[in-house]
Length: 146
Image (cartoon, rainbow, N blue to C red):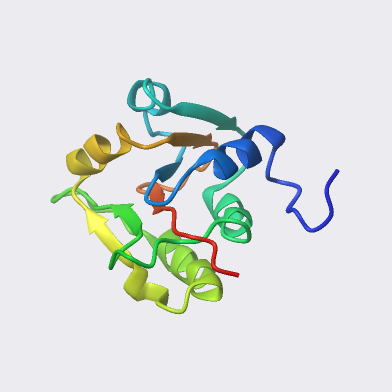
């Protein structure tokens, strides 16, 4: 056990977050995301039984977002024609706003297939049990300045 570290962050996940360098990306994937396929050249961490919001909140306690890019947080855009609501995005924006002064301005939406292409280049993919649709989020790591 470590003091001050959110208990949801497994030793494997902490190691990966520490190994990542400035501008590396990590995907926190919902349960429908093809984590093993997209992450075949990355580290895939299983977090079954956990949702994206709780992992996002814990990760942002130890993970700085990149300040050298306008949008270090990417969401998978809803496909045209899909009649899907994405209330989980509001939860994400609230969580990010607690840790990054840019708040909603740190976010961008990325077309679904472009998101997959970017995710293939991610350092790691966290496969969660999140059941919300279009709940995938990608974070770009920044620099610790404190």
